[in-house]
Length: 85
Image (cartoon, rainbow, N blue to C red; front, side, top):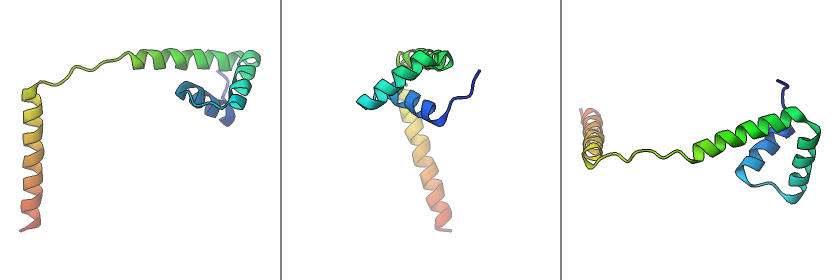
């Protein structure tokens, strides 16, 4: 695989984030037409982004949240107790 230039990396990030200016859009798609390695990288990253955007995490149960916050409060109380020794 060919190393990407800093400019290519910047354009890839910006296109995937949807923040390219009009001039950058023209530049990026022109580069894609000229550089097959850049097109492969773009398609790979776009596919990864699409998969990541479709991920949904299971919501923790109420019991899990109760244990979590109880643990947070306990840690804070212990830290405060150490400060007052």
